[in-house]
Length: 145
Image 1: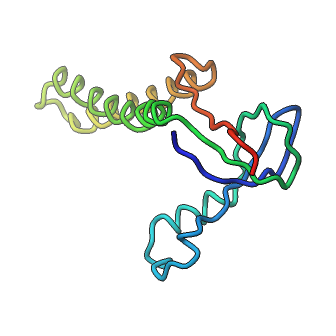
Image 2 (image 1 turned 180 degrees about the vertical axis):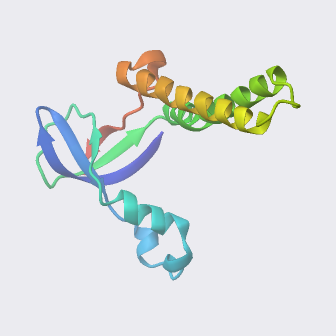
Protein backbone atom coordinates (compact mmCIF):
# COMPACT_ATOMS: atom_id res chain seq x y z
CA UNK A 1 0.00 0.00 0.00
CA UNK A 2 1.44 3.38 -1.03
CA UNK A 3 0.98 6.18 1.50
CA UNK A 4 1.48 9.95 1.40
CA UNK A 5 0.60 12.73 3.78
CA UNK A 6 -1.78 15.45 2.63
CA UNK A 7 -3.75 18.41 3.87
CA UNK A 8 -7.54 18.64 3.54
CA UNK A 9 -8.41 21.76 1.54
CA UNK A 10 -12.10 21.25 0.84
CA UNK A 11 -14.99 19.11 2.00
CA UNK A 12 -18.01 19.03 -0.27
CA UNK A 13 -21.01 16.69 0.19
CA UNK A 14 -18.94 14.04 1.95
CA UNK A 15 -16.14 14.23 -0.60
CA UNK A 16 -12.69 15.26 0.59
CA UNK A 17 -10.22 17.24 -1.53
CA UNK A 18 -6.57 17.12 -0.47
CA UNK A 19 -3.25 18.61 -1.53
CA UNK A 20 -0.08 16.62 -0.91
CA UNK A 21 2.58 17.98 1.40
CA UNK A 22 6.23 18.24 0.45
CA UNK A 23 8.34 15.25 1.33
CA UNK A 24 10.77 15.97 4.22
CA UNK A 25 13.63 14.38 2.31
CA UNK A 26 13.05 16.73 -0.63
CA UNK A 27 13.19 19.84 1.54
CA UNK A 28 16.89 19.43 2.33
CA UNK A 29 18.00 17.99 -0.98
CA UNK A 30 20.57 19.93 -3.02
CA UNK A 31 19.48 18.38 -6.33
CA UNK A 32 16.11 20.14 -6.63
CA UNK A 33 16.89 21.77 -9.97
CA UNK A 34 17.69 18.51 -11.75
CA UNK A 35 15.30 16.23 -9.93
CA UNK A 36 12.31 14.85 -11.81
CA UNK A 37 10.48 14.12 -8.54
CA UNK A 38 10.71 17.77 -7.52
CA UNK A 39 9.52 18.90 -10.96
CA UNK A 40 6.58 16.49 -10.84
CA UNK A 41 5.74 17.50 -7.28
CA UNK A 42 5.72 21.18 -8.21
CA UNK A 43 3.01 20.49 -10.78
CA UNK A 44 0.95 17.93 -8.89
CA UNK A 45 1.04 19.61 -5.48
CA UNK A 46 -0.82 22.64 -6.81
CA UNK A 47 -3.99 20.74 -7.71
CA UNK A 48 -6.41 19.30 -5.17
CA UNK A 49 -7.21 15.61 -5.55
CA UNK A 50 -10.52 13.98 -4.67
CA UNK A 51 -10.16 11.11 -2.18
CA UNK A 52 -12.58 8.84 -0.36
CA UNK A 53 -12.85 9.15 3.41
CA UNK A 54 -14.97 7.64 6.14
CA UNK A 55 -13.39 9.82 8.82
CA UNK A 56 -14.86 13.03 10.23
CA UNK A 57 -12.50 15.66 8.83
CA UNK A 58 -12.38 19.41 8.58
CA UNK A 59 -10.47 21.79 6.34
CA UNK A 60 -6.81 22.05 7.35
CA UNK A 61 -6.50 18.55 8.83
CA UNK A 62 -3.36 16.60 8.00
CA UNK A 63 -4.19 13.09 6.84
CA UNK A 64 -2.48 10.02 5.41
CA UNK A 65 -3.76 9.08 1.96
CA UNK A 66 -3.23 5.59 0.59
CA UNK A 67 -3.77 3.63 -2.60
CA UNK A 68 -3.35 -0.09 -3.23
CA UNK A 69 -0.44 -1.08 -5.47
CA UNK A 70 -2.71 -3.40 -7.48
CA UNK A 71 -5.13 -0.60 -8.26
CA UNK A 72 -2.27 1.65 -9.28
CA UNK A 73 -0.83 -1.02 -11.58
CA UNK A 74 -4.22 -1.64 -13.19
CA UNK A 75 -4.69 2.10 -13.72
CA UNK A 76 -1.19 2.37 -15.22
CA UNK A 77 -1.95 -0.54 -17.56
CA UNK A 78 -5.18 1.09 -18.61
CA UNK A 79 -3.69 4.53 -19.18
CA UNK A 80 -0.38 3.58 -20.82
CA UNK A 81 -0.26 0.05 -22.16
CA UNK A 82 -3.74 -0.08 -23.72
CA UNK A 83 -3.21 3.00 -25.97
CA UNK A 84 0.23 1.80 -27.08
CA UNK A 85 -1.11 -1.65 -27.91
CA UNK A 86 -4.03 -0.10 -29.80
CA UNK A 87 -1.65 2.14 -31.76
CA UNK A 88 0.55 -0.74 -32.89
CA UNK A 89 -2.38 -3.07 -33.52
CA UNK A 90 -4.08 -0.49 -35.75
CA UNK A 91 -0.88 0.07 -37.69
CA UNK A 92 -0.25 -3.69 -38.00
CA UNK A 93 -3.74 -4.44 -39.27
CA UNK A 94 -3.56 -1.63 -41.83
CA UNK A 95 -0.07 -2.77 -42.89
CA UNK A 96 -1.30 -6.31 -43.51
CA UNK A 97 -4.38 -5.17 -45.46
CA UNK A 98 -2.84 -2.44 -47.63
CA UNK A 99 -0.89 -3.18 -50.78
CA UNK A 100 2.35 -1.20 -50.46
CA UNK A 101 2.22 -0.30 -54.13
CA UNK A 102 -0.84 1.81 -53.31
CA UNK A 103 -0.15 5.53 -53.32
CA UNK A 104 0.09 6.99 -49.81
CA UNK A 105 0.21 3.52 -48.21
CA UNK A 106 2.23 4.88 -45.28
CA UNK A 107 -0.30 7.65 -44.76
CA UNK A 108 -3.14 5.09 -44.56
CA UNK A 109 -1.17 3.03 -42.03
CA UNK A 110 -0.47 6.10 -39.89
CA UNK A 111 -4.12 7.17 -40.10
CA UNK A 112 -5.25 3.71 -39.03
CA UNK A 113 -2.85 3.81 -36.09
CA UNK A 114 -4.15 7.22 -34.97
CA UNK A 115 -7.78 6.10 -35.31
CA UNK A 116 -6.99 3.03 -33.17
CA UNK A 117 -5.33 5.29 -30.61
CA UNK A 118 -8.37 7.58 -30.50
CA UNK A 119 -10.66 4.57 -30.05
CA UNK A 120 -8.49 3.37 -27.17
CA UNK A 121 -8.80 6.77 -25.48
CA UNK A 122 -12.57 6.64 -25.92
CA UNK A 123 -12.64 3.16 -24.41
CA UNK A 124 -10.58 4.37 -21.44
CA UNK A 125 -12.97 7.27 -20.95
CA UNK A 126 -15.98 4.92 -20.93
CA UNK A 127 -14.24 2.51 -18.56
CA UNK A 128 -13.52 5.36 -16.14
CA UNK A 129 -16.96 6.91 -16.55
CA UNK A 130 -18.84 3.73 -15.75
CA UNK A 131 -16.17 2.26 -13.42
CA UNK A 132 -16.09 -0.92 -15.51
CA UNK A 133 -13.69 -3.72 -14.65
CA UNK A 134 -12.92 -2.10 -11.27
CA UNK A 135 -10.17 0.06 -12.82
CA UNK A 136 -11.38 3.14 -11.03
CA UNK A 137 -8.54 3.76 -8.60
CA UNK A 138 -9.06 6.57 -6.15
CA UNK A 139 -6.95 7.06 -3.04
CA UNK A 140 -8.52 6.78 0.41
CA UNK A 141 -7.82 8.55 3.69
CA UNK A 142 -6.61 5.92 6.15
CA UNK A 143 -5.87 8.06 9.20
CA UNK A 144 -5.83 11.57 10.57
CA UNK A 145 -2.50 12.87 11.89
